[in-house]
Amino acid sequence: MKEYKNTQEAVAELKKMQERMAAYSHASGMLYYDSVTGAPKETTEGRGHTMGIISEDSYRILVNEDTPVLLDYLIANNDQLDENTKLEVKELKKDYDETSKIPVDEYVQYSILLNEAENIWHKAKIKSDYAMFEPYLAKIVATTIRFAGYLDPKKKPYDVWLNEFEEDLTMEVADRYFETLRAELVPLIKKVAKSKVKIDDSFSHKNYALNKQRKFSDYIMNVMTIDRDHCAIAETEHPFTINFNKNDVRITTHYIKDNLVSSMFSVIHEGGHALYELNGGDEFMYTCLSGGTSMGIHESQSRFFENIIGRSEGFTGFLYPYLKKLFPSQFKDVTKKMLLLAINKAEPSLIRTEADELTYSMHIMIRYELEKKMISGELSTKDLPAEWNRLYKEYLGVDVPNDKEGCLQDSHWSGGAIGYFPSYSLGNAYSAQMLNAMKKDLNVDALTAKGDLKPIVEWLKEHVHKYSSSKKPPEIIRICCNEDFEPHYYTDYLKEKFSRIYELKD
Ligand code: ZN
Image 1: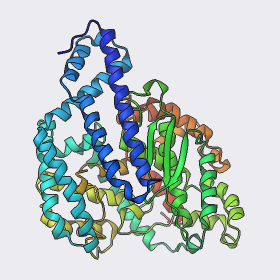
Image 2: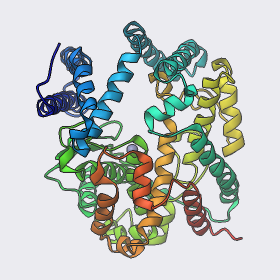
Image 3: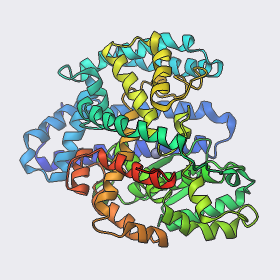
Image 4: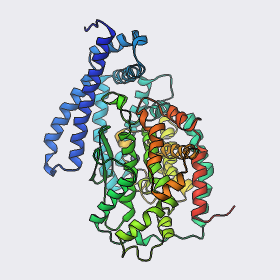
């Protein structure tokens, strides 16, 4: 067993371990990125082989007999460590404990189950056959409950999983959040549906040449002050952001010929994720504190740019002359107002990923309620479709015609990601609260209308980005907003905005 002469030696070992972890994550990230961007079709096998070796090795960097000795030594000598090293030790200790609490054979069994479940889910979705997938979901739910007991037997199982995806999130906080949404948004959505304002967005579905859309993406990234020497854009089926380190971030988009706004908002959304990574603190490079702190805070950054900036009246007005020049025939009869209305068209729908800003969180709330009930045992997986359909009717007023467009639409549950959905919606709510705080320092509307996003990016860098993962989500909210998370900023923002767009009175 390893012994350390002094703290200095142990700290050097700790840093070396994290550098190795960062290198493995760089390599496997690059392989993934290559697989969805440049790799030829028939190259899966060799890459899978390499990935298998990389993931096994990277697991062993953390989980081996030396790690607990190292971490215990550093914990015993905690008073000699600087603040960031203390946080690194805490973080790695948590990772190590969690990984080693689940018995290895059960962990392996579960990854085999998830592999099968994902495969079956694909087929079940195509056939719209929930019964095919149900036995797998039942096993996933049972395992999720059992694993929660290993990770933290004192907590309620669903609280354990919420915390896995958004640290310090509990059902108590989430219940209050979703209750606010339900009370405020359900009536608003009904009013919008009855509004006399009918939005015609047919111009955005004309033919938009892909090379011009690519030029538009470059323009957007430039306006967002994204440093292209450190951030590239590629094209993939599903848009995403990946960071290898804070100096090498990649975003992707998907161009659709007869849809101008699809890629436009993907680029703005992923650009928001990219800025968070690019502006992380230098001192966290190659440590476990690098990168965004949570999925919810990450989404707050992407959605801040996508919705709050990107779908605002000011920014639409700013982009309008550029778009009119780039697409003169498609924009011939299009006014600024028509553009604003088209990108803010709100209507209840079936599919989460295509939902508008107003109705989006309702899709999440439905999933939250279902997950909560499945994990508490109140809802059997057999009864999931009926309950799914009932909630879609209640909250969005839509009838679900089949399971493909209903409870089989998302891949998350087949991948075991139970507790993940709420962070998507929390991102929206965080971003609205951040806007409120930012407005105390900046004239956000005036800057947005000029396309001058630099002060906005700088503000976010100072209050969010520069901390990388060294602060937890609730701390980031307090630093940013001088108060705890408050869901009403989000519902206030939506009420104000959509009352204006849809000319609602009262
Ligand atoms: Zn995102």
